[in-house]
Image (cartoon, rainbow, N blue to C red):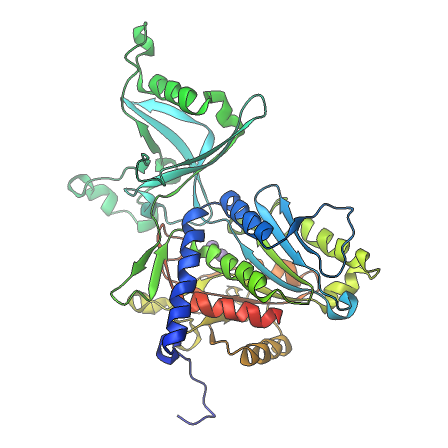
Length: 457
Ligand code: MN
Ligand code: MN
């Protein structure tokens, strides 16, 4: 093929020995993050700790910012902003922003979850984000979150990650009795109200009265003794069931990695490490948003005013208007895309798909049908990104989320672009997105890290 033709590059094919080592070493740092931060709360705490180590100080509204400042803003423990203030004129240069999200699809407990049925203690759930319900049965689940007790004290919960911990479970039918269920469409195999969690099976035998010798009573005693909580405390709790799996390499060559919640912590990690490692003398902001999986709503989602409030704080510190700063700012909306899957070719368009191990994936527009609900990045901004990545030696590709009219999806990009900020989607191709065990390529993770560094330079 001549130099005039465009061709994707396979990162591993091009990598020399030292690049291979860099890719695999970088993935080990990510493994610690993805295994140690399975919810937005845990990711937020992880990043706050890392930022403090890098000299970042907490920011409070009302404080003035000055060149050289490194601050973070922890929004309610679920959404965190890292800001590095450069020495340039913020009104002329704007801010380089990278936004990723740290919430992932999962199964949440309802506020009145506990009940007993036929000698089994169970919990009612309400799923969070787009899950394929049947995938969440018959796998080990860990319980994560926080319980606020009547006196206001908070109990942090993470049960099922340690090898010695118990795990939790959603049951499914045995094939011998599944004839009726098998005849249903796949999406109806398990309904939302079928996702009930197995919590226990031993009755409270020490009870004086027979009516108290129940499995639920025993469970309430265990919860009280171990965690100091009573049933009413669930009213003010956020508890989530997430897969209890640890990240593992996939395949003989170990080029791929499976984990729960790559979407979108696989982009949050490179955003933070690129900021720490590049430490640019530019005003840059890393946003790790919550609630992306349910529409970026609420005080901790990307649509929260906190985002523009922080830009206002930066602008006013330098005596320029927020409008001036936003007009000159640039943003990478860092989120995953669907990787081309040879098992499901029929939903992918081969020319415009992101392929595993072919580098960071740029998505000019997302949305559904006729690009509905999309931030469609301009050709000019795409050109700017191309030049940045060429200068940084970044291997990247481009792709849409599946064939036209096959489905679709969105990211936080449009909410940022709506603020008059040039924004484009970039991320890592994922296989089995939103399943309990998603797969990415270590090479793409590394290239996204290089891409963010090039953007910050
Ligand atoms: Mn995502
Ligand atoms: Mn998602």
